[in-house]
Image (cartoon, rainbow, N blue to C red; front, side, top):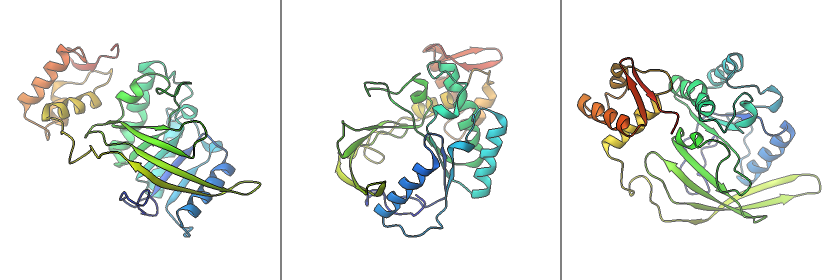
Length: 272
């Protein structure tokens, strides 16, 4: 992303500044890996707009003071894509098995930053022991716009990227090869290359969602456990359809018990 090079030599990438909240590994490991990847990509520039917050400076993203530090980080470096590696160390007060706790991460950190700074936030999360699903509540998946599952079998020098969810239509999988060049002490070079691409079923070829489905996605993304008045929902969705269409979608969501409603407004049903 910071170099503007095509991903895997094929997929176009918009060049922009990137920030990484590196909460998983020591900064020495990050440095070794980044250098190895840069060598693999044949990137020689050292003044790229890539900024890393090391593990020793990481905190709780739900704590106001640390969040303000992140906002300052985004503003000063003009970051457009923010990676979090991984989500657990920066959410110590969250029980990721509880839907309400997981939803807090989205409502109190992700959504405010995305709306305010128009950035993309990507976070990494571990799977269960069988590597068949994500750890914790399914709210991690439900609240995300796009979800990828990265699968590696044993010690194979390749992995597969599966697009588990995409609000604009899932795309096919990518099989990616990895080649490591090591010396006795550390990895010197990491090369990534495309081995196989499944039939493209994404934007442009997949059956697009209907207007009602898009409005439903929008409503579910903006409602929380705090009452949201009908007029506010209509205003936030006004560019997607008429008032009657939005009202019809709201009625369907209440009927399907995805939303709860009273005289004060609508809330998301956290029990399902």
